[in-house]
Length: 481
Image (tube, rainbow, N blue to C red):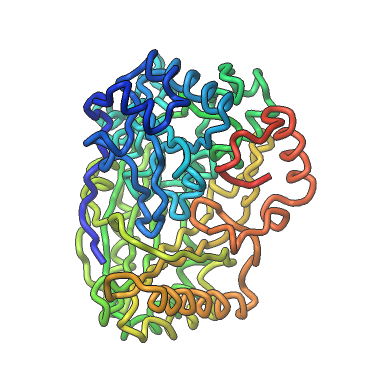
């Protein structure tokens, strides 16, 4: 399994080189779009297609018949209108890192509208907000803001599309100090199924503003722009510690009983259990201390010294930094084939810790748990957003793959069995919110929408779906209403 500093996907790709005859042969329904905008349509005949067509999870074998790469809002409108009029399946890609790749369903006969060329960041005059393009990547946003001494929370992986990450909730860096990604959405510009454009905020279409913020991943329309909150860059202390498996029992006992119940809001670090070297499982502590306004980093250094004293802890790096430099230099997982499962737990309890300790015994599998912990400001309810998971919890998304290649049905079955076994062991602790899900990381098989949103919220969302997309044209995102 490969972990390395991330190279962000290019926001600038060469214009499509298809001829009209190619489109007429491969997908004639798109000839009207080609006649308007020939430079944004990529099929398998175009040499650029291969670089922009696949999902992050390479186990998703479906490839779109066509990739449309809009450069402006009118391109999105025209694509939506033609796809709807002709019945061509349409999926939306803002970043493309969603592990289940639900927007790729049936697009082997249709279109992926790839928003990543609509990547822009424009800071307001008061430096309190920014308008960003619907295809803006988190790492690009971090860099653009850092150059101006500014900041906003993003996800842990720098190649996540900001729209898809934030609209589902937005777990990640500094959420305990600043809130989730969804809490930073001030406005959305959306292309609806009829091709019209609506501006959405607390005053305009407040019902849709509520629905988008927590249940907004590709089921209402195509997001072409977001307005988000930004801040002066805080003082950050960031680093990484590694702990080998023989020390996990002592470390997790202390973590479950002393550390996690008392984590300060300034800590937004995460735990990652994984075995990139198959026979050497490791616990990674991503340490991130975000000083409160007016504070220096003295408390952060003191807290890091405590973390450093954990049994067997080896410091990989620690420094005062800006958030863009850190996230772009951190070792992150790269595109590969995975199977995924997941569950939400009350936290790193003693029982959950024991399940973790009892696993990673079979070196024929890679298995990773990137464990996001929600506490502090991220738990503060917001009645203007439908995002439901406003209680302390830790998410356990499981990603796994067989060590031997190529993939075979037999190897895939073994991986599926291993994931299911771990999941059942976690559930059996009684310390999980079974069925509740963060859908950016937990797949449909482990998601119960009523357990996640509650009956009343779910009924309201379904009514709004009928109001804004009565034909269910946008049917490949999530939640599935």
